[in-house]
Length: 328
Image 1 (cartoon, one colour):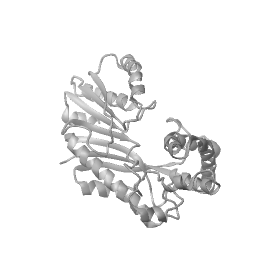
Image 2 (cartoon, rainbow, N blue to C red):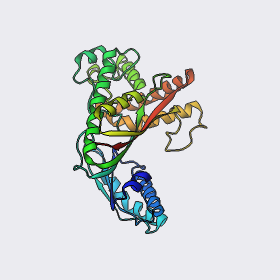
Image 3 (tube, rainbow, N blue to C red):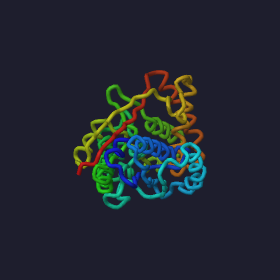
Image 4 (cartoon, rainbow, N blue to C red):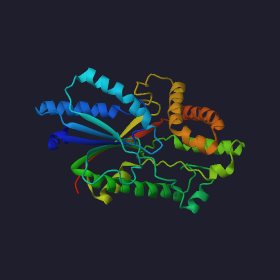
């Protein structure tokens, strides 16, 4: 971020946060960028630039709650920094980031945190064969045939390529992207929370707690790519130079508790933390499909399954971090 500002020193820096959500950390990105730009402009003895932020998420996102929090946010900024930063404007830009959101050559920096592993649609929607072969499951599990994995990978590749193509048109020459998303290692394998949910839903179907038709028509639209899969799509699309592409491995249950230090927690508390985190992410989707009445039972079982997983093997999860500059 500092290098981006130092290289271009725009009078108005335009930043878009893609998949901003509406939680307590939504405005944290803005605060961090203001800090970095202020320090960089001070170092260069420049007047701080005007900052224009665009908050993006799907149309159903609670943008009103974000805007209601802005007066307190601005008050804290002034208390922390005085008036020693440039004018700051914050807008909302609703819509899917798998497509165009902004005019050509209009954005200096795109940021996205934990949004790009979500797919644009059910990956098995156009593959009746894969859907039939994965019957009883709503995600990739150990018994899933290769066709299911290929369908998920194909959907991810299509989505991510469209994402890159759209952003390359919207970025100014030399503009940058910083992306963070869930990924995976194959050797040694990392875990995910989606497979346990699929296995639990299958158990609940067999026990008559959910309907077969609902399970058969549902697939979790998430794909966690490897470093190689990400790199392949970036190279194939061809608009970006990768400055940094890394995978970070952490023990399951650590560093997901609102940014706190979870390393001291015992296994049961870690499993509870993972379950609460996954419930916050998945409850709206699962409630809509299967009904709110099954959610408590589902995540009680989920916590137990995560606890069992952590007891029998070393369980780790992976995050991908990508920094890119527009070249085309």
